[in-house]
Image 1 (cartoon, rainbow, N blue to C red):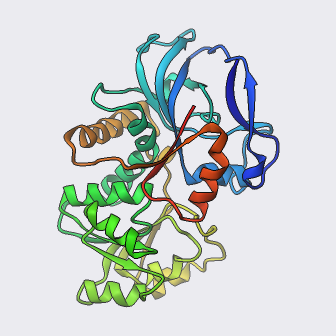
Image 2 (image 1 turned 90 degrees about the vertical axis):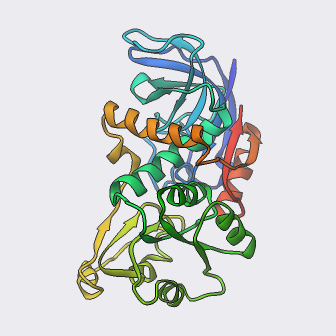
Image 3 (image 1 turned 60 degrees about the vertical axis):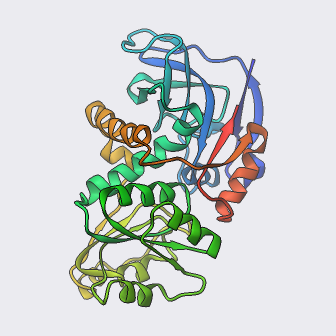
Length: 325
């Protein structure tokens, strides 16, 4: 028997239940992974609360982790029992000791990257890859605005931007988080609880504003983010931490300077095996070179997944959170 987390209904952290089940056998094209570490992400909260619908109830949670191949199903090539692997974008159910993962969503894990780092880095790191390298391919020298710069995605973005020669202005909610963002390579920070975001961006850029804003906060920061953009700038809205952006009059993009908007997702960029491998290769290269270090700041057993969700939702966390089955 193996432990995993299931939800029978959507709601608060109390809907997370630990159950014992026999590990499922992998079907055609599937690999069974014995998880050594599982990533915790805001999208897990969206599924738990019903912001994003699960395919069916009861349901597992989580789609990112790292471990060792435990069993291989029919029609799988390239993976064998005992291989070190990592995954993101798997079907829901990573919160557990074992997880069935389509081989197409699995990647071999280099020996120099440990399981906790991989579990914390796959979804967040690949997100930063498509944000900085694909939504607007940064060349170096740009000044950009990145919300939640001390969080899991933001911490990686600060380091990646610095490695690219990009000046990242990061928003934070406390002096402690500001220091963390600066330690990770942010060029400047703005504490939105104490400072006016738009005015500070104007000051920091000598009135030029920024060509791109990366916003995972959503509703609370939407309009002020648009006001930080240059004419014909790009608004990259990639999350809903404060709630989804709704009721937007598209004409506002014209009024604020012929702006562009992108609402990207990892699935939209890592949409082929070739692109997935290329993105993972670039991420792993950054990790192995030491240009990016993953701060696994919170480690929790499965039984404390609810506490991990509460801390993440309340923005009490820094860096990344992993579950240890």
